[in-house]
Image (cartoon, rainbow, N blue to C red; front, side, top):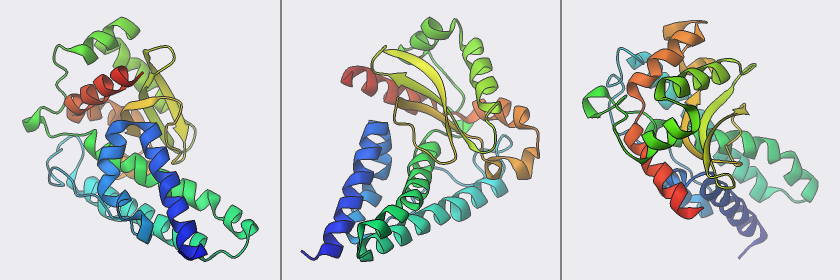
Amino acid sequence: MTSACTSRVTVALSLTTIARSASPATHAALSASLSLAARGVHTLPKLDYSYDALEPHISRKVMELHHSKHHQAYVNGLNAAEEAYARAAAPKEQIKLQSALKFNGGGHINHSLFWKNLAPQSQGGGELTSGPLKDAIVADFGSVDAFKKKMNTVTAAIQGSGWGWLGYNPETKKLEIVTTPNQDPLLSHVPIIGIDIWEHAFYLQYHNVKADYLTAIWNVINFKEAERRFVEAAKSS
C-alpha cells in the first residue's frame, strides 16, 4: 500500500472512530459513507421522507437547501480534505488540514444524525410515548415540558452557530443538555437528540426568531429513534 493510500485509510478510520464514539446510531447512519472512506468517497445520505414531509414545521425549501446544498457541501469538503491529506508530503501539511477535516467531517456526522432525528407527524414525529426515554427525561428533568423548555433555552443561547444536544453521559448514566460550537461532533456524551441552530436550518422560514424554530421542531422530532439511541447507550455504559 502506498503512503497516500495509508494516509487516506488512517483518516477514514479516524472518522469511523469519531462516529462510533459519538453514538451507535450515528455509526449506523454513516455506515454506507464510511464503507467507501478507504477510497476517500463520502456520500450524501438519502432521507427517509420527502422534503415537504415535515411541513408546516420545517418547510420544503429549508429542507431541500439544508440537505442538498449545505450537507452536500460538507460531504464535498470532507472528500477534498481527505484527498489533500492523502497527497500531503509532510506532517506540517497534514496538520494544516486538521481544521478542514474536523469541520467537514463533523458537519457530515452531525447532519447524518440530524436527518434521522426528524420524522413526519404522519410517521409519529413529535410523539413521545411511555417508555424508557420518557421515564429517563422525567427522572432527570422533572417533566417532558421542563426538558423541552431547558433544551430550547440552552440551544437558543448559543452564540453564533452550533448544535444543542440531549446527550447520555455514560459516567453519570444520566441525560444531560450540552452544546457544541460550529460543526464539532458531540464526543463527551452519546447524542440522543441534536438540534441544528445554524441559520441555514431555519432562517428562510423563521428569520431571526430562533424561539419559533425551536418550538416548532418538537413537532417533528423522531422520539422513536431517540429512544433507540438511548436504550443502546444505556446498555453499552
